[in-house]
Image (cartoon, rainbow, N blue to C red):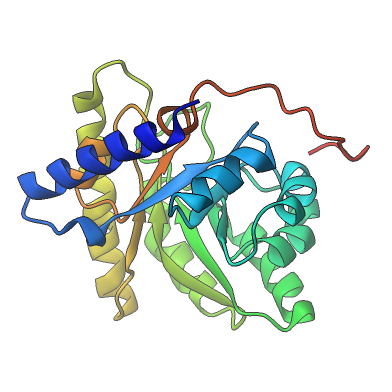
Length: 237
């Protein structure tokens, strides 16, 4: 697999997308999505300079992360079950998929027990898809204020997954609405929310044009996802 070539192409495309809207390339971070990937692939990408990675499953992260280079930054980007919160707080620098007050309250308990202030993003189901997790846009501001009152959680922004389409322009409205919602949340909160995590392999350039600060790239970076073959815990995720 030509990881170096893949990374070069993605970095160039990110820079071009930034240039179209007058942004600097360093205003967007590339996250390597490692679902199904082996630790060796993470190590290879880290050696090329990628330092931010995202994992979808807690159980996979428990096996994989200890095998990866230290000093990497890891985000939990998949749906998080409440019974996995303790492990998630232990493993991840940021948890992106916080989609309810109840989940936030469980994370608060775990972060308090660990003596940690856990960085989080609020997941928003902007398109209102029944098949996806995330808060409805209309409930975000109220929920934001309740979560903000939890002392061991630190809200850094919002994330979303746009509906799949072979045409990336179809995602633009979803991304622009999340950017507008972030601005409303900042007014309500009276403080900046620096992160907008949105855009994946098929639509990251449109996401950048609409204000993404983190783009989550898996297939375009690592190639087709192999079957995860490491020894798994008997506990299902």
